[in-house]
Image 1: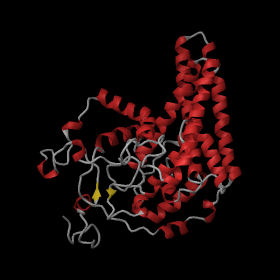
Image 2: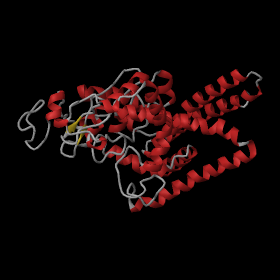
Image 3: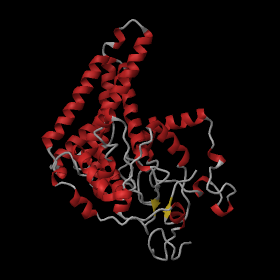
Image 4: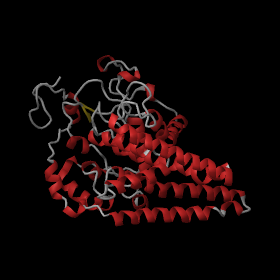
Length: 388
């Protein structure tokens, strides 16, 4: 137990900072007002017309890609048809992920100064992707208010040593690891990552997986569960109605065009969209070198600074509206429009200095290395790092 030892300066004697000391981690003291003042005022201005141009941009591309796909099955070559359908699914998934991110902006009231416009557009965009808009908006708000908090965060909450049935650290022959219980053959590793990417999002919506536990059915489709407050339940129910209305529309389309057409044009891209979502979110909030905090050490600024910026390349950054490479800015100021986030990031980077985190590791390498190295955190300590 740490007493008067510290990473940089004296810390309160009741904090357990042993792991922070071992890892050379400094608890940052971040002044939120200073960071905000360093960013030009225009970066916080929301322009409804400009935001709608991004909606038009994305839906125009979706329509063009979709129209092009209507010709695929007219081709006589089976291998060419398979190739083109896979290219369609990839392209449509990338562009439709941008639509997801615009709905995400609406949930943060970053799309427009008007709450009515934000919630109306967000409801349409997200329900069109089978995302219950208000359910997600409320649970996601809790994530932003508690990022990096071990007991209050709602996204990729670390599992503890004891939850895996591992012995206490002082009784563990493998100590900090790597632990043999996590050893996987390459094929098992690939299969686990595939399941995580392509089924993680619907599983999260249905069961609140990777978030805090609760009693009863914890689900974004259950207005009465502990995720939501009493005042939010009517809007959660509205979201559920919206999603099931779209599902009804898909069944109607199946009766007209055939179920296989709906699967090829909508269902497969749906899984690609949410694979991108899981990949992006996982890598933004899971990193071997970054800890999670207990209530004793956490505050909003410290939690926000645990976010990791990553570039997915110029093309993907563009189509995903820079949610990947400006996510630190988003966590400090979530109602800032995405089209100002690159400029704001340059100022935030200067203000945070060494507490700004960017990882240039190629995304496939980052995915598999993070998956293997970030398995659990200890059951004790006020600053806890991932172990494997």
